[in-house]
Length: 252
Ligand SMILES: Nc1ncnc2c1ncn2[C@@H]1O[C@H](COP(=O)(O)OP(=O)(O)OP(=O)(O)O)[C@@H](O)[C@H]1O
Image (cartoon, rainbow, N blue to C red; front, side, top):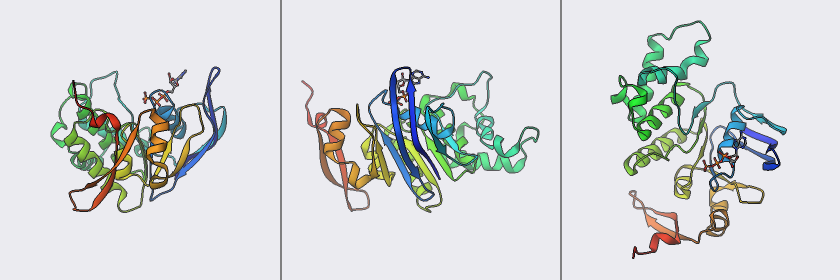
């Protein structure tokens, strides 16, 4: 389980969140949505213990698989070494990674479709390729809690599809708590059970995706008119999708 209880965070005079509470138990996934600069990353950092709280407390296990928006290292590392870092908390300060750690790291890279980069230098990869490696690093922790900060942001459509399929696979056994931020409500509709909408100038809305992700709420969230559409998915079943009204506009 991971979450926040009565958390307030201020930067100077500015209140980012005030007495905010939510939790994600094992078996559920949460999507956090909100406009740029509203406090999504700050909320994730608070959950992970990287952000000082003005009030309240965080609820989190000792080891969490975390995918930051980006990562850079002061040294040059190969991809496999970056993923092995996900094992660090289990290894402790002095133990070297063994064959089992390398096997776990390779399996994680295989799962995210990044095994072909295992010997490449991490800093030579594209933004999207790095994101797949960071996701593998999070999986390699073996934690049953995964926290992902805009995991799809740098991904092309094929890799978004792969990421959503992978999140779907990770969610299916209902033995993990998964939290991710996204700017795409359709990603929330596809793989989240609950949504936290960080409304501009108002308290966040939290609840099951089907109750919270309404066109009205999304319009208030982004200030853009939204429409609901029903689309037949690859499985032949009708699925709900949301589109901003500009999706129907023709370029002049
Ligand atoms: N350490 C800090 N000190 C002062 N202000 C900060 C600090 N960290 C973040 N902020 C500010 O808090 C606000 C929320 O930032 P945050 O990164 O959480 O937004 P976000 O919702 O994740 O945005 P985006 O969608 O653009 O990634 C921003 O205005 C940011 O500039």
